[in-house]
Image (cartoon, rainbow, N blue to C red; front, top):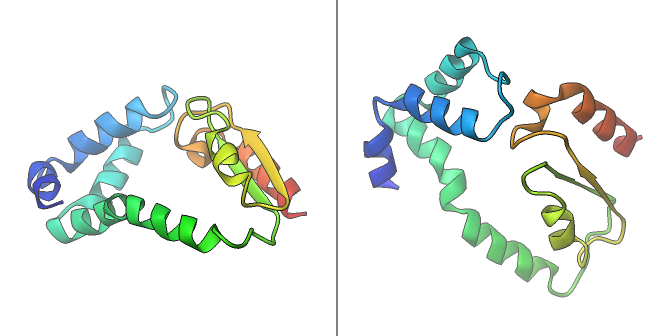
Length: 128
């Protein structure tokens, strides 16, 4: 991850702008929004912290599979996919969840930001 921190250090706004606009519906993020997100990544410690989630994804996946090998999730589970990912999350969780609800948002990656009404409606109904 050192290479990523060195690559993006000082270029946070360019990174956020390119990534967020590529992964979302047009017009989701204003220039001020992108600047605010970039500011939260500005500096090597913040970049390291922000990228740490992605660095641990494979390990997290192994840990989750190990935990679910002999048991299933006892609580209801809501799996939200997107126009890009479809039902992949629900398909991955279906062997492990006793009660699974699958929804596909009419959005890109940033569901809550792109369609907050849809997200609020679906999560509120699920939690009710």
